[in-house]
Image (cartoon, protein in one colour):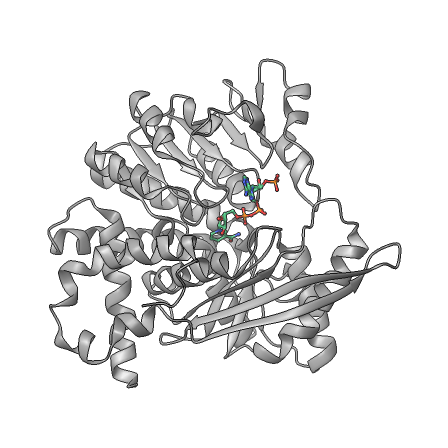
Length: 440
Ligand code: NDP
């Protein structure tokens, strides 16, 4: 009923949620009476705009910009901005829809949104990035506000881009408030925000492994995909906890380093606006292996062919196929913890669940980023600055709570260890209650 028959990725996300909700939807007559499902799958607003900017040669460039404000029943719209050539309304609707549930699971007062542009940051100069961000905000600023809609980062948008976006917002509105999260620490950003999603993923994994299998991550071989913000901080925290992380990847290929990924080298290639190929890693680290995307298995991804105890997909949607799931299981993987949004294909999730592999959906395990974004909003509103340890403790505690909420809900509804259903049901109940209490 979403009127979006061509939106395959969005419909994939909606189908998964609706399947989880089947057993509970009849349990409360108000869900039907208030048309909760129909309202929940339709965005409040889709905003689309043209972005015009000048490149370094003074040529006019044009991109599409979007903000999808999906649901604000629990609080101001909140969700990242993605700058990547693959961005379109279908992708952003899927991300904004997932964000409603993720934000609900945190227990914090934030609604769901997402936005971005088909702008490709790769190969752009610092000044081109700045001009593009300024042009993007010239269009976006009328739709956002600290109590209305608070965008953050996502693929292609880190604290540098958020800084430029904030600068232009302030320039236009003269308003110095917490309208964006993920700001540089120098003006209103929260400590630990850059690390929050990746660290949160590992805190969630630690809790899940300890509660379900009485296992720790120490000494365990882990595979991680991606080499961006989420992947780097997932690897960093795994290494701090004594795990051996043997892979990383980007859009062109995968590196395997049996002695453990050297994060300094990955950072030199990827951080501070550099987006150099990971093939440079193999040139520098003897014994590591680089596999180009062209040499991946026909139906799979090189990262998931390596044996591991736990796998952490942290790059992008649909990057772990059924073929990959079979390889992981054959190679003894016991847990898959999503860092990216919806990286695992539906048939791969089913297989993991059938075979008893612990599987955590991104909306539960990657909610640390939005949680620390909300901590940033709190700090901005109260003009406070919390120290690193305080934010880290709060993040760890919040990830444990999310795990507990998800696993208890799964038990309550007779689907023990099905964290997909547990997450969807727990998140839905909170949003639905708010929608009912607010009236139509
Ligand atoms: P970054 O832009 O920092 O990194 C993305 C990484 O994924 C890069 O290594 C990039 O490769 C790779 N990648 C991007 N698109 C593709 C693609 N189509 N195929 C293969 N590889 C790809 O983004 P983040 O780390 O912030 O985001 C990663 C995932 O985590 C996304 O799903 C995002 O929605 C999700 N997420 C992010 C949060 C955050 O706080 N940043 C919060 C919650 C979820 P390359 O270097 O070649 O570009």
